[in-house]
Length: 437
View (cartoon, rainbow, N blue to C red):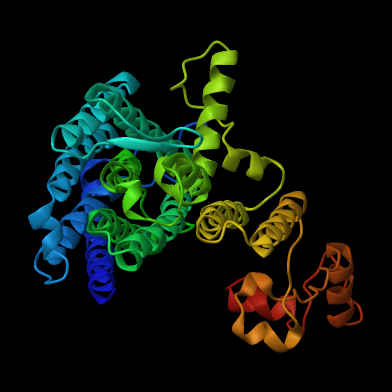
């Protein structure tokens, strides 16, 4: 665990320190597109944040390669090289898109090629445990098609949800945290060495997101752009594919009996393996709704609009920060709820807790204008937006102020509005100016 934490911290530190210079580079190269109709920010903001995230990925892999307990991942498996190859290709396409706005079909083709590069180096799905059937081995073509489809769907799901400051990085970090705990449990709890690469990928991905978030929280100073969103989507998909493709379900030996009964009973355990989309259920739901909405209107599925889930939260009255926190809440509930259910599927209290938290989430959705206020004794330690506002006195009308000023100015006897007001005499002023008396 210490080696994974060290890798995570190094990745986060490199990403955080490089984001500032990358922001200056993006401004110098003009990677600051004009505000579009679907954007929610008000000022042009530089992109290319994915550059810092990619170098954070490289730093994390380099550090892990020199650690004694993690070096075996690189010696016994080709998956880290496969991940780096696919990540470099999708990152390069993302950088070009952030600068020159590439066509959607070009990006889709690049996503498929990146997935194919990883498949060619062994990062693919080999089998699937299906309830009622057992463990089904996939042919080479079936595994390739399923792997490519999973990578493309995950990349676009993360890309679609990247619409608010800190939203994509935070949601991916939450989902990856749940996935890391599960992969680490397989590697350490069941001594399955094949789960080590996925655990390493998850730790590095969390470091990338945590290092970038301080620069991307509202108001964001830099956006990750497609170079960042497609990169973290690919790594998230690769982590799930690594476990699904390399971990043999029979090695878990959790249940006794026939293979069919064991696979059916162990279905909750394999939920995060077979369906990593459950970890990013919110982005995937947004992706499906966007495709249905656009095709129903006769538009291209890749046409941009303001109908995403985060846009709808803003429309019903939630603030920018509150909309992001609500999306965080639902992402954590689904990811960690799935993780808890996979560990203790027979515990009723897990279902009850998930139900109660879901009800709380629905209440938060229905109270868009609720503004929490801290008690007066805690106002000194909370942000200003949570403090009680002091009543501001209303300004007095101008005519009333003018009347008060007139009352304050003494008017000498014998003078009126057409003559000078004050102690000076108009005759002395004329003599000083050289006028004859």
